[in-house]
Image 1 (cartoon, rainbow, N blue to C red):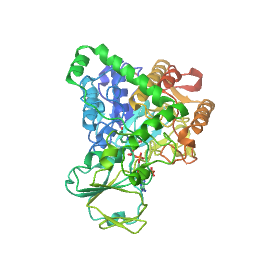
Image 2: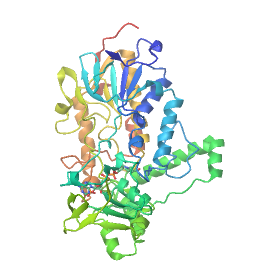
Image 3: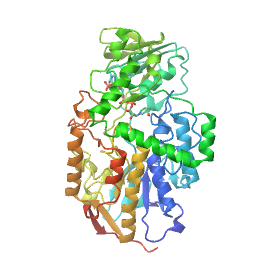
Image 4: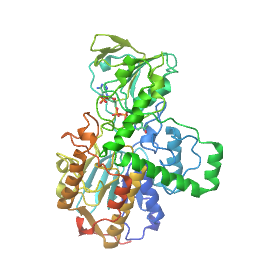
Length: 498
Ligand code: N01
């Protein structure tokens, strides 16, 4: 049986052995924080052959983050080198790789290790990979991401298409698209970025749009060399920029789901961008008929320009089926394409799955989560002692920086880990505390534009309730500043001699 290993010589004898699942932004951060406190007895199991999570997978043309680059960093590691307001996927990947390297996390990562099962044996967790390797851990922390598993819609005949086809998060860079006819199904954040990036490169681009999106017309901009130098020489200015962006976005996006006046301002700016579409027929096709903010806002300063190019065709008739040569819409028209991209989003409610979890008394995650992804404050699950999550269900939604959210959750988990180490206990959230917290969040979520704004989106669970918490980072920080001791059941943990 394997151990959650790495530098075990430094093991203090009281610190728990930890397995972290996933080497994305969350897993790397947890690794950095553990090392900073001298806890080196942990392993990060990563299913792929590289770290980076979202930014490893999403390498489609134009992939970039729509949270300003200076905010999309660990707060303790500002980056003076960003060249543009919004960073591109490869630069973001490099930043998080560098953080893992600089902070000594790389040797803790084991690649090609997809966790298949985690079973609690009454004392500790037995983690098994798909390849059948076993790891023992006192604590398991899942940093597996929420938008991770591609949603590939079941469109009749898709298998008959003879050209290359792939999901936006599995881009096949070997396919030459220059001068070719490209079909893009889906006009969310990914589809919009792909269209903007490829409109001039391909011969013809057909965007199959089922629902028009609200597009916030924020242009990207270079960060002048002088400013980059200033940030390098004067870290205080960079820290101030982080705080400024955090406050601005918290102010704008943090309460937007609950605050109609914030949304009215957003709608005004989106409509001003839309007004730049000259052809009234095209503009009508791009005009959303639900409230702004109902779906996650698409942020792009270039989409409306791209969609008006002669090489781009916006197709709004529904897709009937796919055949060998392309996509046939419900009006019977065949849209011939050489390659097809599914920018159709992710299975946002498949959190932790397909991993199988078995907690105390053999209870499975599927049993605990039969109806809803029940959890306590996004990080802990009843009946799953010492099993924790980062960016779990009911984390804040909207356009906030997920890095900031994960930092708050990590700070909270570190306090739980301290208690686990000091008191040698297993911590499980109480069911009553869990349901009190969860019903509060769900009641609030039902009042949001996500639920009432007249759209369908991946925010909603099967009951039509958003699985997100409409609170700002400021509110998240205060609600997760200190764990409430009595909300957890603490049972003695069997320990090994050091
Ligand atoms: O996915 P989406 P995404 N037939 O789910 C359509 C983050 N992100 O990958 O609206 C036809 O938003 C679907 O149509 P509809 C960000 O949080 C961030 O674009 O359901 N169409 C929709 O248009 C984002 O919100 C960044 O009617 C079908 C699209 O596919 C999240 O990831 C960049 C269909 C899916 O849109 C997901 O974004 C990229 C079907 N059968 C992503 N099924 C940045 O930071 C689905 N669609 C910039």
